[in-house]
Image (cartoon, rainbow, N blue to C red; front, side, top):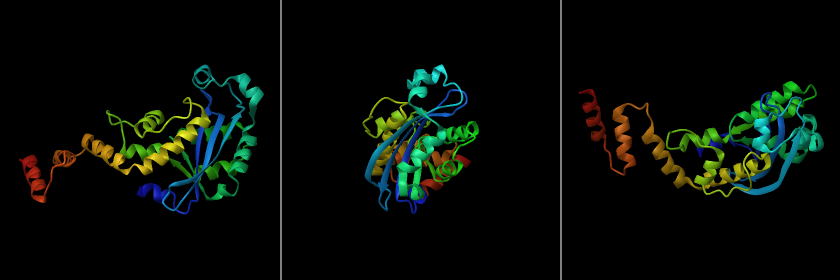
Length: 241
C-alpha cells in the first residue's frame, strides 16, 4: 500500500491505540494500546504486551457511554488514574520506540479525545500528546478508500474485521480489545491485496460522480471485459451525441 508506505517511512513500529471518552465533554476514560514492531515493508514482526489503563475524567461519563462500555463513575474512582499519569505510563510503555513510532487509530475521534483531555487537565503532558498527534495515522480513512459497504459508506471496525476474517478478541468498545483488533485488521489488510483489489473494483463501479463514459468503461473492466482506446473513443462519441 503506497500511502501506508509513505506514512510509515522511517518508522520502526506502530502503536495501535483506542480511547473511550465521556459522552459530552469527550475526555479520556479508558486507554488501550498495543505496540508492534514492523519490518521495512510495514508488516508486523512482533506483538508486545497490551497496555490498558482507566483515566479519571473531570466531567461525568454519561449514561450512554456507561451502557456502551460498562465503565462507571465508581470504576474510575477505584481503578482510574489521572490523565497525566496515564500518558506518562504510556510513554514509559513505549520506551525507546516512542520517538520512532507511528500511532494508529480507527477514525479521528481519538485525537479529539486527546485534545479535550488537554483542555480539562491543566497538568496535561502536552509534549507527549502532540507527538502522538503529529505521528498519527487514521487507518479507517486509508482502508475506506478501497473498501466500503453496499451503500458506498465506510464500515465499522467490527464489520471490517469480519470482512477480513479477523477474529475479534472480545467485546467492542473495550479500549484494549479494540486496539488489538485494529492491529490484526491492519495486518490482514496489508496481507490480503487480492481481497482489497476486488473490493476496490466494487468501489470504483459504484462511484456516483464519474462522467458516464468513464463509469461505463469501468463497469466493463470490472466485469472482466477487455477495453481498448477505440472502445473508450466510442463511449465518448455516444455520450456527446
